[in-house]
Image 1 (cartoon, one colour):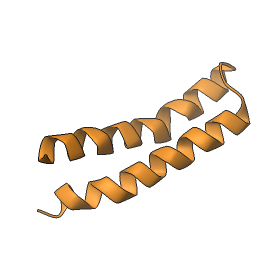
Image 2 (cartoon, one colour):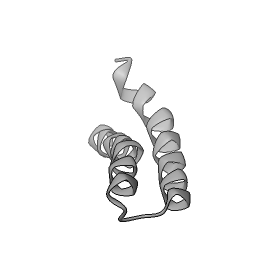
Image 3 (cartoon, one colour):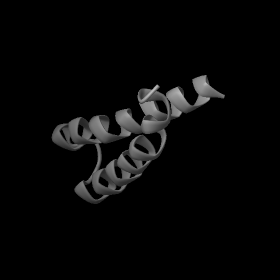
Length: 54
């Protein structure tokens, strides 16, 4: 279970970083970037504290 939470938090972190690169390249729109980054931020802040504090 702990490994699944770690993987989910790193996916959230990736969703917070990768869309900015993709919008800079012109691969996605700014609106899609905002949505993906919001989901990534939510995933990261929900899952990361469960394994980083221990």
